[in-house]
Length: 466
Image: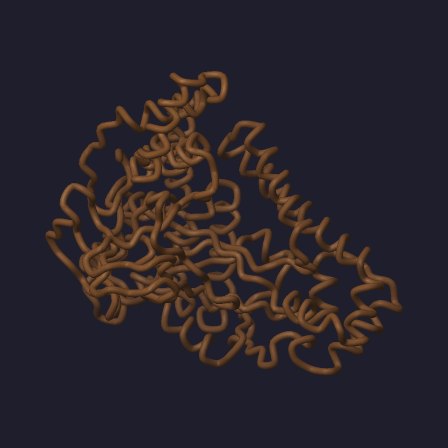
């Protein structure tokens, strides 16, 4: 690798500017498989609106807070009284059945709850300090709820953009330079949202109409954000600082950055693990036997809420019906294969170092997430030598060549020409000559695109145009 610049991310790796490839993560020393290269907390994270209907979580780290009874009732399912009594007996035994041991309320009338005073204090060092109705009155909270409802109807990445902008405004009010903070926040992908949308939805027939809808959504979001900033921290900013924080071009770049390189979070409900690990316990086995129908009803409630969200997204971001059916079918298979009695905490997050890691279907690392907080680790999946680039797979490496290429082009806007894809492409093309009846047209088309692809020079850490 030819490295032009480097910034150390941990003792084991550094973010490097690679010639012709943009940003990437490079190993600073040889590590063995299973070694954790770097761990980091999300720069910004949020719990999905539909997930908040199903699971109460810490507003700081997203640890699930509910005990057994409240977790079941929150799903809208009414268990029979005898089962409720069994669940209550388990809760009376304390953790983990009773949920989080130390639920900490924010200042009244703020509805935010935290799993610890540490989480609350950390949140009040960032954007929550400007959004807390206990400090600024209920008007700022109501304004943020209006912004979140707009994001649910357009794109939830706008909530991450709002958090980033409010956090920048808060730091500016404490004496930091607004231009430096804006450059740092948008450093990962300095590309407007409209360009990202064109790459992500290039197969959409009415792409320009879709781009225009995104632009309109951003304009309305900016007005809603201005109200939030004015109510929360505006009195501490000069007019020029306020205008800089609300600059449309910068907000558009943040939206594009979050839209392309945010990650989906799914943090397991700790009550599921407790139920699985204590199946031999008489009371737990009694609950599992008597509650099988109940847990099926909870899973059905989760599926209903998820489908409602998908139907809303379908109106905003049209997907092929077959693709959506496949997603739902795979989710049903996964649900049957694992004993997830209660819903996980689901959301999206943005990680500074993870955002810099490039893709390869022949990856040498993977991202793992801590069970109860928005924190990620980059773990080596095979031995990595000094100077090697650390690579993860953005899609399932077990998928076929055509399936991987379709997803990468559709979701990230590039054709992968990694070692695995090139090797499989050559094999597919050879088999198409020797035994054409055994190779699908999709695989042959994907193989030709890989073999004859000439990648363009990448900009920054962007995957656009690869």
